[in-house]
Image 1 (tube, rainbow, N blue to C red):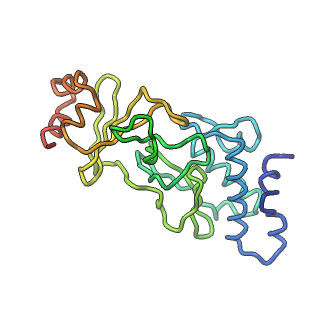
Image 2 (image 1 turned 180 degrees about the horizontal axis):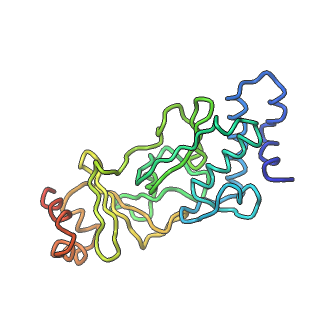
Length: 242
């Protein structure tokens, strides 16, 4: 049985729903629930994957980033439920963002990629994405990567890191340091901490010099503070920290 047909068949029978006096939202909700049921059992989230929705539904790929998963859901809505292409909006959040810990990935292996500085190995503080994708249809937002639907656009976003927030690219390995809008929390990329779904992880900590030095390591921190090329912005930021 083709994967699309399998998704439509259950646990909720969307074919039967289509023959009843149900709303489009009810049919979309049923298809979304079926989609997540299938995805949790057959697909993996891999941020670095280049697979798309066509490959997932064709069975030629079993892993994808959030964009690929959202595209697969869009095809289910269009080809399975009969929604017009123009009635499904593919929403893109460009740039780095933090989704709250209340949102769980469809892939049960993915527990998050953000830990606290003093709790290594516990990545339960949400996810940092470099971009995010989901759908809007019939006035509702469907986010398959985060296994949820919601009423407000970008509801999953706890913090965005854009031109209005402090971000730094550090050292030869270009480690990313981001600061929340209230200037109270730093989030640092940890490239040597792969976690399920991601090639690296992040650590978060109160924005102090002591914590920043601890997170970077003393040698790295001192080298960055002494750097002459491109580090002035970082050095200025550090000078403002308690």
